[in-house]
Length: 266
Length: 315
View: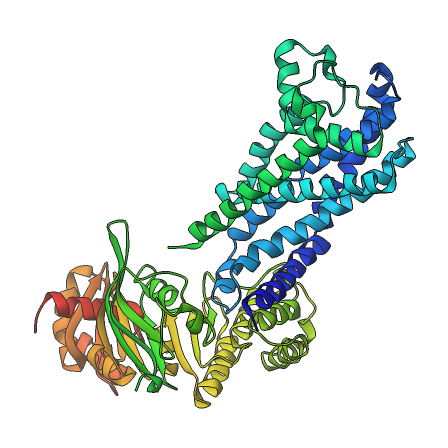
């Protein structure tokens, strides 16, 4: 067998192992399913009435925000699961097998990505229920989902990097919450940013979450409600969002491979 | 040539910071034989196994497994070994069968082969009924058996087990020994670490005793036992001050002059075939009151105490 078929086969075997973990502990999926659905309902029916969106209705505006927020919080699951796995002896056994070593991380990421895709499906359905619709052509809509899926994969690898960098699974929660929470809320995800104080508004304008949210709304034909003087990246959200995604992957994947080697060497 | 040797090491050492976990280990384990690495926690056993299983790189020296160098040809070594260790375990969230199938697949078996092999091994270790139970819901003893089965999936020519029977009850331990003997009889080379002299005695052709990372003794079980004496007698004295008198009184029945006192308990190496009544008579004759006499097999502690004492006090 060539190295690449070995890598693909081993990755499949290990992805299956991680999917089996999710099947055994389905609670793991709550943060990408139940939690964002709660957010959808909360913002649509509790806060939504108080938030005005220029040129459209809030429910249509909201879904792009929730989708990206959920993907951003998706760093947590992969981070916790890799940190937990490394604390167990099974990784040592895998390292004594004639398998491709990169397959361990690839399999892990592949399985976590399945969770991301599931979240996109669940959220699209709950969006449809609260009145969200796609008002774009099929190609734009597909491009929207492709960009979201790619961004989700980037978040999986970012979470994996966090998980590989900390000593315990608990630390992942703290780091992820402390960083992801402000980034997702100080953005265009839930409210038009025009009304924010200058400092926060500038932060929100340059925030990659804003870029991704705006790209999603643009591709799905939903209201974007940007400030008139929005900076260039926010004016060209699809391109910028794709660049952010590619950039995060280009940095996180090699760093993960290196960190994994360092973590398991002695 | 090298194919005749299952495992070799030369000057093998491992340093963590300025602490040497293992120093100057030289081994030559013939193919199809069993080497027992005997030592307490922290003696360097696990370090040696980690190096030989490619999990850890040596600081000094070289090692080969099935003819392949562990440092320069680790990938080839991994196709030849089965490992069960304190570190290398199975996945608690998978079923016993799923674990074995996964390991089979990652050892280059086809899906069908991996499944057949998994069922075969579960049957062999008596876990067929529990094949579909999650490993973290099995008892400790069953879990160790899954561990062992996992190391046998690829039918490796060299098996390395790090304290395989720790935590097993005596019956399970016997079963496991029998399983290992079967494989060794078919030509498998086995390296096992243990804290139990009895286990090394039961299985090993050669024993290497490690202490603080260094080899303090090696030889066949018979050689080692003749050096330390097989049986021990613990005498609990009514008056600890009698210890020396008791040692002198019992000297005719002692295998060596190796005696030690711990509180009111005097321990001597007992000459084989000594009858208990003779010991009682000697003590009575010397007017020493013993509260208890306990005759037993030498433990690893006895071996260490004897061997380290011999090092310090040249005969």
